Amino acid sequence: MVFAPLAGFFCFMANTILVGAQWGDEGKGKIIDVLTEKADIVVRSQGGANAGHTVRVGDKEYILHLIPSGILRETKVCLIGNGVVINPTSLVGELDGLKQKKISVKGRLFISDKAHLVMPYHSELESCAERLKGRNKIGTTLRGIGPAYGDKIARTGLRMADLVDAKRLEARLRDRVREANRLIKAFGGKSISFKSVYAEYGKAARRLKPFVANTTKMLHEALAAKKEVLFEGAQGTYLDIDQGTYPFVTSSNTTSGGACTGSGMPPNKVDHVMGVIKAYTTRVGSGPFPTEDDAIGDMLHNMGREFGATTGRPRRCGWFDAVATRQAAQVNGIDQLAVTNIDGLDKLAEIRVCTAYRLRGKIIDYVPTISNDIEQVKPIYETFPGWQVDTTKAKIWNDLPPKARKYLKAVSQSVGAKIVIASVGPARNQTIFR
Image: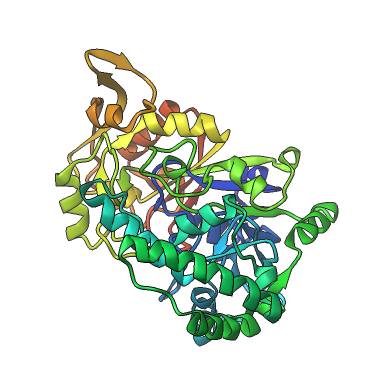
């Protein structure tokens, strides 16, 4: 793909943070892959293997959970920052998958020695907690992400620096397994074997040790050398532990500020924040979803769309929520938008956009704090005529049907940020730049 003729494209590169402006699954993997044509370094700064980015290159599809999507371009350097929580065996599996597809990561992938580890007891504790919550469960991926972040905050977690030091790993792991098993036993779960975990993680450590580095130092050296850095966000704004629909959120800061704390990037070095949104809205798992519409979900699922890259679960689907997305733009400082899955609306005769909420008789233009209140809001919609034309072959903005352009213009205005990328399919060449 050649970007040189695309007027304005380079204006949003330099140091750019890319975030999901909805509930995750916005198509960030594809957008990151496209943007890495120009970036020098791609950084993942939060989350764990509960995230999944799907990238299609030619007739091959890649699903990445921990490794930044930039790894698919052979000259790009990728960093997994200190804010990420890592299951070493999952990461080794991901490396093996790339190797099978002839993707070399040698000299291009580096893992922060400060990144915390996800251990088997974290997954067991999370399963116990979800089971005990019954109908009030959060709907996590059960990969141990939350308990791993919990240990980090409690200052009892293990880090990559511990993993690659066999003696320190043995001593610290023995204590942690003993403590975790007390809780697991109290919750009625299955105890974890120190011996088997130590053997499994020791094997993973030997495989991962060449990649472990002081990535904060590497990042600042890159900034000093005027390299262009792209931050690959995971999940979405409304899964942020502080700004999301609490408690139905993930355990990390998925907003743009998290990119700085999760990597060591100073805020004054950020040039742009790009928000990725779908032309409609989706959500996975439990929690409030004001614009959810079963008919849209059935249509998209019947098209073979909207199944989770990580879990395979069907996503909940609904109309575009301009209220929530506008607030996400404010929280993140979004100045550029990438709109994906436009082609998912191609068959509809009528399309709706939520422009405000009605809560207990009062019209509001913000997302309430309490999840029960968000459950009770009634969306106020503006209706747009559908274009009912196949958009997947569009190459430039004016190739899109006039009704599609009108719809996207309304989305842009309602959010308060300019659309610079429009995606009409999963492939790299199904990307329109403005």
